[in-house]
Length: 117
Image: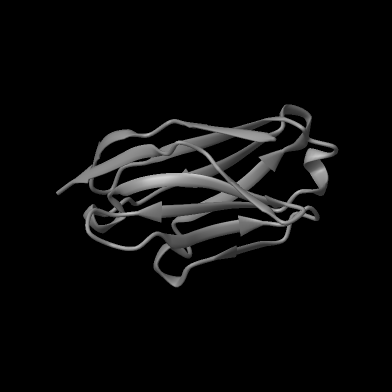
């Protein structure tokens, strides 16, 4: 089992910034070998991919956050981050950390991000 715990969400005004963290624990053979992802789910919408970082540090983002969000990782802390700048009301959602280990997807409990206009 792998446990993922997100933190760092909150209420922020449009144009503001937040940094989300996701700490991994449990049956982790090697965190630095794991690809880590962020997803989000807005009210009434399907969960969508936001960003990913590979074990080698290669990143990719959904078009709507490119240039505003940055995903990074600290392998010594088994933690992945999502720095969110220039936030918009449409970024309001529950943000989830995710990874795939073997054939199993693991998800955190989510952290709420609310951006007021």
